[in-house]
Image 1 (cartoon, rainbow, N blue to C red):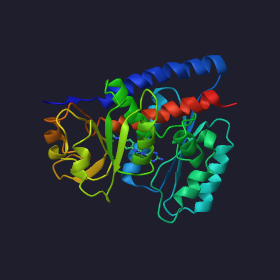
Image 2: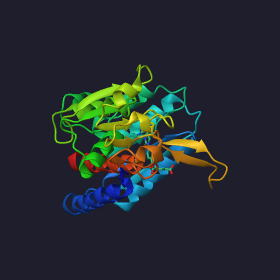
Image 3: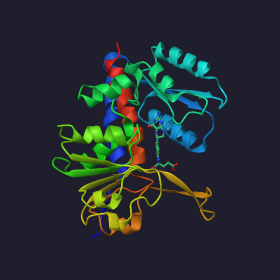
Image 4: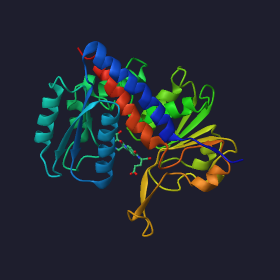
Length: 293
Ligand code: L34
């Protein structure tokens, strides 16, 4: 078997076209231009490139984006002040504080300072809690993007055994919750594995859907996959490569070529989940703007 490679860029482009039409309608009927405030602290190269891609994506579908960059040594107080100002700025419907933050800043405190109605990352405890009990909430972008990729590729989650490898607050934990909910995109049986899991292979071999979100290259090898399983690779790892134009290559958490020969579906890195993360941020910002009063 050779897996169908899911084109995340194409799915993202389809959703962005749908969003663009919504934005035009919002502008025409309500006179509202959805606005996203982007906050980047420091100069981590990966974060910089993600943030730039997010701003570019805003422009492409007609969103207003407000670029805020703070030095790596800025005080927590100045960051909290900026968030307070953005919370009260009527042009801003969504606030994105790119993570990770420098070590001297308390990430939880910063996330809790964001108005839940503008928390388009879905990281505020109010949104996390609402999501878990199945109430309307901003869904976190990467997990929501994974659900969209599964649905739009025709991969059935209902009754399937989904094995998630990774338990982060931004991917593994919320994705586990979304997949187990009794919804069209969920209703799966979910197992969450992590660095403390004994005999990881034992679990991944039982999966109809494997979601790799460990943040380490080659975490998922071909021997860990049941023939015909669908494999979603959430990892984005930079590995040094002197031959590559930028001096590094991007790889996921999955041994791509070997798993490709065994799986039914597989997402590439780059061009899989990454573009979907950005797209679902746009989705949430449009949602926030259409709900704003
Ligand atoms: N607050 N922090 C906050 N929200 C998020 O949703 C994120 N995340 C993660 C890191 N920190 C965050 C992102 O935006 C990861 N992430 C992210 C976003 C986009 C891409 C990768 C990670 C992406 O577009 N990846 C491209 C390749 C980009 C490149 O060439 O470097 C891809 O095709 O996978």
